[in-house]
Image 1 (cartoon, rainbow, N blue to C red):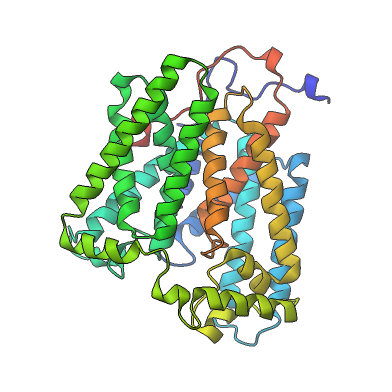
Image 2: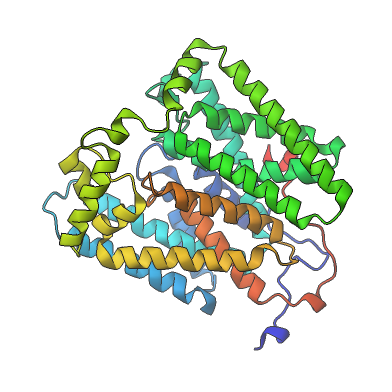
Length: 424
C-alpha cells in the first residue's frame, strides 16, 4: 500500500476519538504515571508495564517496518551489555541491572508502536506525564519541608528527590511538564492562563528544590528553546509582541519566586553551595572530570567493556557520563549502537517539528526535552532513566504516524493538547 493510499490515523478527522477513558487508555495512563515513582529497582513502573507490554503485543499490537532501525539498534546495544557482563566476576547486581536495561529498551519499542497504532494515545501519554509531574513535584516540595511524618524518605543530602532514588533524576523528570506549561502560557488566551501558571509554579519550585545543576540547566534550556520555537512559528507581529511581554513577565515572576525561596536560611545556604559551576567533587583528584579521562583510557583498552557498575566499584563513583557509561557497561558495540540511535532519533524528530501537523506542538516539546537530556548525559548517567526511553519511543511513534500523513485527506482539527484540568 502506498503512502497516498494509507488510511488516515484514527481520531484525527473530526471525531476526536480517543481511548483515554477506555480500559486501554486507563492502563496506559497508569503505567506512564508510575514512571514518576522509581525509588528502587525493579520499580512499580516495571512491575506494572511488563504484563501490559506482553498482553498488548499478544493482542495484536503491530511493529511497523519504520521501527526496524530502532529495534536493531536497541538489540545491539543490549547485546553489547550482555557481552560486557562476561568481563566481570562480581555478579551481585549484574542480573538486575541488565534485566532492567533490556526491559527499558523494550518500552521504547512499545510506546512507539502504541502511538503509531493510534496517534490520539499521544494525548493520553502526555496527560499522564503531566499528572505524574505535578504529583512528583508536590511530594518533593512537601518532603523537602518535612510537611508530614516520614518526609525524609523524599529527600537526599538535604535536596528534594521526590519518589525517585536521586534528585538528579527527579528534577529532569519534571522538565517535560515544564516545557508543556511554558508553551501553554505563551499560546493560550489570557483568561485561560491561571491553570498553566499554577502548575508551572509547582513544577518550577519542585525542580529548584532538587538543587540539581543539571536539572536547572536542562529546564532553562528547554523553556527558552520552547519559547523560541513558539516565537519563530508565530507570524503575527502583535502576537509576537505579546510573546515577548509574557516572556518578560515570566522572568520577573521567576526572580520573585527565587527571592522568596532564598529568604529561607536552609534554602539559601544550599543554593549558594550548589550554584557553583564546579563542585569540589568535580575538579578534585579522582573527581568527576579526572574519572572521565581514566574511564575513556580504560575503554580504549577494553573493547568488550568491563561490566555494569564495575567502574564505580573500582573508583568509588559511577562514570557520570552516558557516553562513557555506554563504552564501559556495553562495550564498543553498545557505544556505537547508542550514538547511532541518538543521532537517528534526533534526525527523525527534527524533520517533523516545523511541519504543519496536528502533533507538531507536541513534537516540539518532546524534541527539545530529548535534546536537553542528551546534553546532560555528558555529566550524568542516563541509561536507566525510564522517561528517556519513553521520549525515544514517542519520537519514533510520531515519525511513523507522520510518514503516513496525507494532508489532503484531513480537515482542520483542534490541536492535540492536554487541558489543565486533565493534568490535575
